[in-house]
Length: 443
Image 1 (cartoon, rainbow, N blue to C red):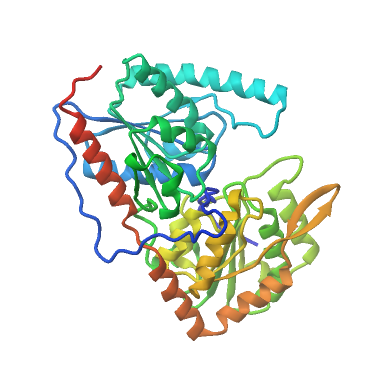
Image 2 (cartoon, helix red, strand yellow):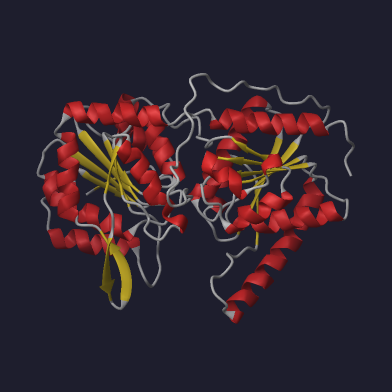
């Protein structure tokens, strides 16, 4: 087994759609008009918050990168949750980060869990009050996840006291069905941008607009040849890229490994497999994948074409190198593979709110851009888990790769489904909000 040296992007566990609602972004032919950031003598400060998973972190980083590209003098700071992936991702992107206490709202009425939530969130709000008072940002940009709740609550308190230096607050919702934090944030924010038109009715109509999904500039910008050279992949290889999320997806990991005998029997097939970083009593992605792989007893030559890693910070290269993607169906994943024009096999997260991943997957399938495989349910050690048949997955992969005409058609349909104007539209909105507020003095 060879090792990919780059480390992967996340699932983006951010996810999207209510039952019966087509999770579809609007396709636009012309790029969004770029507004000029407002002029000001001292640098503007933007405070970004959101995280817990890559699906909330990466949209924020994409917006931050575009803000900096338009206004190199802008000061950008990030506030995230302790112990979550933003703690490592944000500094790697070149932005300072402050970590505060945050905890997700527990489901059900468990007194001890609710007490822990209240204590952690309360402490996080106090920390966020300090950071807001210290940096006095002109703009707060929140991209969801419980990591953003302390900042939003602190901003709300300062607004009530008329002490907030943050003149405007923008919230971006990646999913059709908003998370708990963003539903609350909709009451606090000055403006909300949504990725899908079907999300508009969840928020106050007077301050909610369709913006689209903010895709990072590097996605779709890497050439196939450069990507393959960076990963040590032959030019003529047929490359399958499989990943679940930043934490990993057990059903996908196991199915991909079970599919290896059928896939690697073809001498031109390489499999890039990003297993995720889950290390818990219920599932250890590294240990479980290693044990399952060892039981296959694959030949060394086969293992040389299987490239496994736990994470990648250069997913744009893995997309560019790939002929086929196997993954979840979150908003981020389906948008990125669509923009890159990659045929896909999507395995929707079965317990996502509103079954939105299944709707996303069916949308691409209905357009002929993807195939969908659903998990079945099994019980293992008293635990209910999702299962995907590896042999069936291998047959489906080979069916797509062995039909060049259908593969090319799927690629074109994927690219036609999404547009990448969301990032411009969002930063245009930020510039407009700031321009309207700069005639008012700081408080």
